[in-house]
Image (cartoon, rainbow over all chains, first blue to last red; front, side):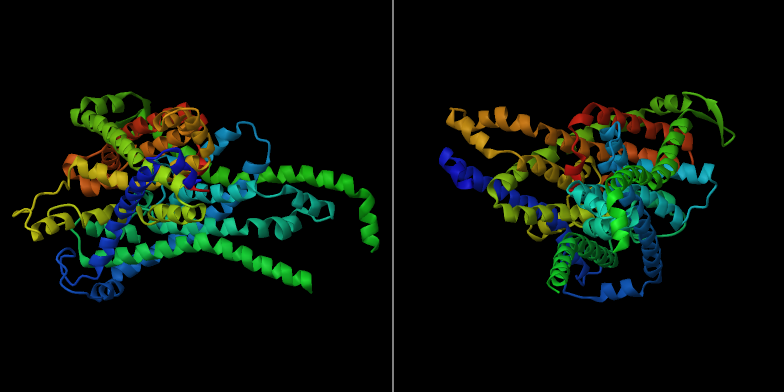
Length: 282
Length: 302
């Protein structure tokens, strides 16, 4: 296709190179700040910036030795696990009627269900703050933060699972029903194995989003700290190499988790195919 | 074996009943979402609406209706100018983001082999899935008097004394906002460009259209929903930005999100609610106007 385009316009070759150069600049723009952040975390310079005065890993040692950071990490993980469980269950369950039933106002419901990711998190944060403190008279805690985050992460799971269900051949389920499988068995043996990759990816996304969430947590966590909140309180006093190191670790964790979310569904499909083939050959 | 024989005559009716039951149980799937969204999203937002019209007497919120909170907001000139500035910053950042993302998405959809497209796209959206806070924070290493740009300029003897390289001002906010929301725009624009049939483009030029004309008459009308989605999905979150103006904007880069946050942190719930409702209302209006062309799934790569 590209070659044909060149024949159509003699300048197409030039345009193509210019656009390619533009794309290169875009990638540079996207990754340079992150790369610098990681580089500075290994810089021996006490002020966490230029010039480079040698490589060191000691900032990472300080990160692991800091009890405040360990505390924040525990809170972060506790919240993230809760959020993952809640949003995976709620999002997956809601994906079924969204895709399959003949609902009136379907587009409206679709947009409504994705509203929590479209409106600024600030609004979710402040409205829940008022709700928890003035209506429920609930003490702000990691639990209230987890509820707030779940409102925001659930639509992501919902979108992923709904997309998977959309491409799902419903006659498979009908066939199972015709063969006498009840709802539970159909769910367990036909539907779940097919949507599992999406559910799993959704769970990983929810976990990562929770790990990194800032604004909702900021209003709802009360006296506790998650890692992003901890970093924020530190940044207000200026950049330090320790914060750069902690930031790099958090970045690495997110990247690994998201990488898994992209790769694991593919691997899962391959393993399942292998299992099915082996069963068939036996 | 006998059970199998017993089932078979009843099969069609059984399957029909199962199908009907299936549709009923399917509605049940909404139940947990209804609880979560209802109790912790819809009700709190409704509460904010109510608060914005309620009075405060002796530090207590009383359920008396008033426009006082709104009147107060518009009576303070810095609040009004901040609101306008927010709209400006959001519009400018959105325009810049689209302007940078469009040539990129165009290149990706048209000139890159299909196999590579997915990989390059994942590379673009990868930053989106990393910490939002850290993506803002990473710019503090670059901008500012002690930032990488200044140090580099000093080292290269371009300047003798550090220029306050636009940290703590609006340009820094715009730059960081473009950085933050670029993945959204690139993804959405790519999704609509990817569906475009480039043969139509060729056909138009075979019929004598210049490339510019073919783009205006053939390409743009077809990808308009994608552009609308990109604009909306970049513009809306920027309206409620708190962190970017807070960290890189300083006192000169304040946006309405910072005002709202300050009201709530300071315990002025009713006044904060009024300010929050101003952006909420604007967002709802935008979503209603553009609801038909929004492609939610495209923006999140689902």
